Length: 171
Image (cartoon, rainbow, N blue to C red; front, top):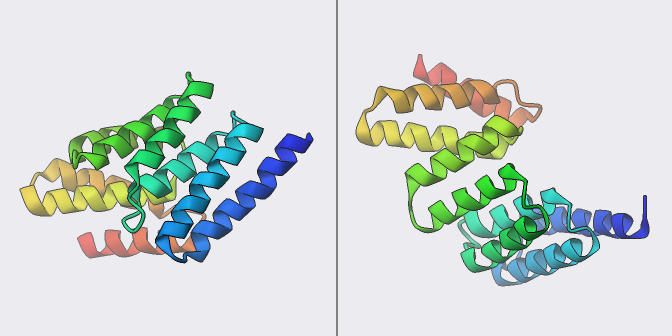
């Protein structure tokens, strides 16, 4: 492992601890963006940086900095123009910024079909469940059930429990 990759690894750990530790939202936002910029400089092909940092800034309610999230995603796409998952994360985040639930669902479903992202799977299930309650379309209930079922096999106990609880309540 080279020095730049090792540096990226240390900054990545700091990024995860920053997000997990919470704190004053404005300061956390600055640190997330700063860490992301440093990781991009050291390893512009580290896709997790863009997906994680961008989604935290764009989708977590207390941060909601679409401008900074867009900068992160755009930089990621500049260095990784062929990565469809990165583009779909960005597309979903942009749809969310415009309250376009349908666009968000389409893009995030593509991500979930390509990768294992329990947080995103959970979000999709809740959105489809909410849409079913609002519109009554059985297709939305089927989609919610599909995503809750995926969570039942999660490695994370929290998501397994959510999936099992939701499926049990639907019976």
